[in-house]
Length: 137
Image 1 (cartoon, rainbow, N blue to C red):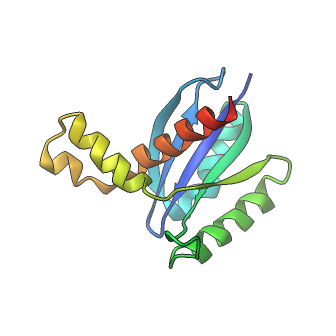
Image 2: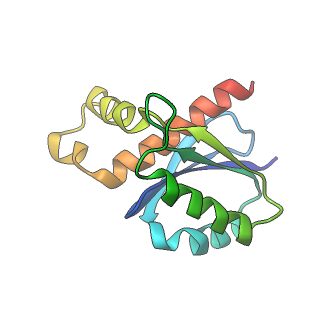
């Protein structure tokens, strides 16, 4: 089987999570500079079988676009351009950063570790992916 990649795209950093080959468990993979997303995906997709990409779509409480929505839509166009045969789905990413920070607190991470925004982005991508897997069953 192949993996599903989740992307929590941001202006500076992008959190990436991935499933195991059986698509049961979501695991944080890394956080990269957002400008490196396409090269990263090209490398990763040559090393691993990838079935689908999901990307978080930022929305406000009332379903209106946020300041980050145009940025994510631009990233989606780039991904589709470079990976035209790879299905891409958007998922609701509301509250994933807050959930990631809460999870870090529950894990007992120290204050300095919880301030690591790269780790927050990676955990947020993992939460998105695990929620996606839970809905897909």
